[in-house]
Length: 385
Image 1 (cartoon, rainbow, N blue to C red):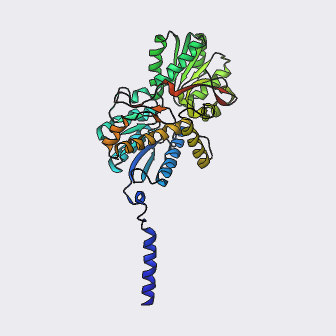
Image 2 (tube, rainbow, N blue to C red):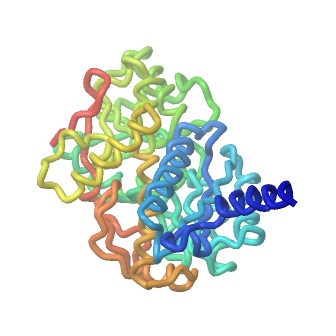
Image 3 (cartoon, rainbow, N blue to C red):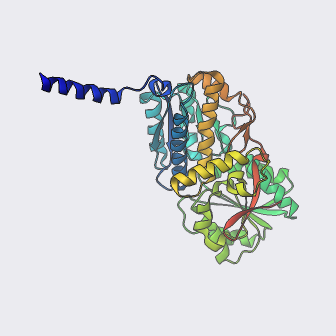
């Protein structure tokens, strides 16, 4: 009998350890399930890995502060390996099996464009971490995105180029979703802004030498080159340009706004211009700027936890998750319809990529003011006028 009583006491103690205390309602309530699809591995891993790190860090912080509406967040992350077919499978799993209430991602424009129709059909909100204008133009009711849009990036580049007296421009774009979307905007805005397009070259996402394209461009004697893509291609362009002795200005898209581009390009990155979100240059913006505290806190938290620098791409995931959380709080509901409706009502929300004001006609919520024009100097970003 004594042994049975002792055993019963041990079982009671063990059970007590597994019962959540009544004073922690956030831990006792059903979780709010949010999905995420990132390119954690594969060619775009330098984008997707910081996105995964960021949402996992944020969920821990949010849950440590009693969750959202008294409920913990549960983040379900799948790696699409930068593969469109695996992205489709991951999205299907999130929507049909995991029954998430919203999704952050995918990482790349091509993958986002391949799955966006699924969210309208499922009536689940998606907040993409990819930049292509086609993701939110025309507006899809259930699809939003956090990166600054292609059009605003092109506008900032052309504004800077015009101030430098540049008139003839060559473009070199990657033949994927992001590159094709950027090329369309370039082809539209170059003549509208008074520039002459003298060369229109392309490269594949896996190409390792762009000497032929750059030689063809050099023969057309442009005043500047605009390269549109994400790594590793643009870094190859930078190195090949240096090898060919092409000294005219080279502009990159916001798709290379991470230190990985500088690392891959080496000293060939010196002097390259690009539009970038303020996360890349947080130390250079005024203390009075509305984004300053958000940026510095995110940088400090991320670098303390992961012992590596932040990137703009991790910031896109930060904004995606925090916009969803804000929409849940605004509507006092974690139901997909309420999240969607309140995402459209968000106004003046300070994120890492800018200050977001969404409407039924604008599911990105940023303007060209979200960018700073930067130049790479001595292996780092420097804001230029």
